[in-house]
Length: 137
Image: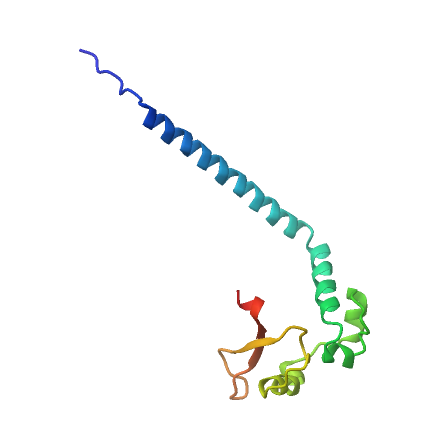
């Protein structure tokens, strides 16, 4: 006697439809994620230029940038020309001011929410890294 194929009931059909809906949603989300990854990796120069301009624009009144006479410029060329490459030691006086409670916009236009410390030591002392709330999210 031949075996009968299992009968599909409406519950099985709904499960298949739900699977198809979920699969379609996942596929669409993957396509969006892939598009985002492609956009940020193909247009890196443009994106970096935009991010730098946003940071410099929002930080125009920060003491450090004013001290170096950036004067509100937001372009990469001016930034590279007027701001020197610095070490932690070059910033230590400003970082110590912040750590000692100075609430001025010294290095950042947003309030410093806490300090992280480096895992290693240089010269026997851990380094303090001021952070803002959105960096910790």
